[in-house]
Amino acid sequence: MTFDLSDPVANLSGKGLDDSGAIAIADALRDSKVKKLNLDRNRLGDVGVTALAHALKTSTLEVLDLYHNQIGDVGATALAHALRDSTLKVLYLGYNNIGDEGATALAHALRDSKVKELYVARNRIGDDGATALANALKTSTLKVLDLYGNPIGAAGLQALQNALPFTDAYVSGVGVDNEVRRYEWRGVMALVGATTGAAKRFGDGDGDLAITRRVFEFLNHT
Image 1 (cartoon, rainbow, N blue to C red):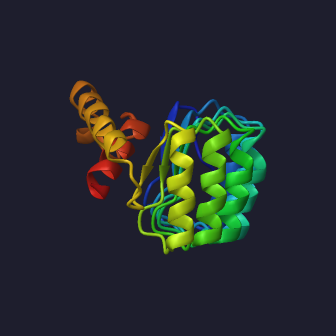
Image 2 (cartoon, rainbow, N blue to C red):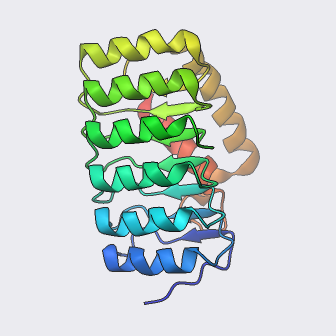
């Protein structure tokens, strides 16, 4: 199994790929110049994602979309360990099986990474993971944190609330007092969508995957 990653954007969404496919993609990624890689709606698990994580350290990838896969704490932790040495700026991990352990590993890695946007909607993140991410907001350059649909309780919500004065990040999906940023973000995304036509090109490898995903996620969560 081989993959052509010669273009700046590679769209492999919904191809039925499993861990063996992810390992093959990781091999191709090391020698490519791809900037945006869409692997959402596949069957990638921890083994395949760990291979991708190792490849990140020598790739030029800036946007990685792993929505709707089968990634757990082991895979999330492998990605976290790779972030410090990667060029990744946007990481989509929503609709997987990541719990507090994986979220905490990601949180600890954010401070020393280039990641600006982290999307972890619809996972299994509870108070411990949310608290770790809240602490990361205070020391990282994160601009967007999407926690929509996670089982976060009062302690985690309070930690996120307490972190807001120390960051200008937009925190989505947890009901924290974030409404001014919510409407600012809506205006920005509406402008971006209108000027680039990104929403009309959703899923098109020639489109802007990062902007498109942000537009759709924002509309879904407000």
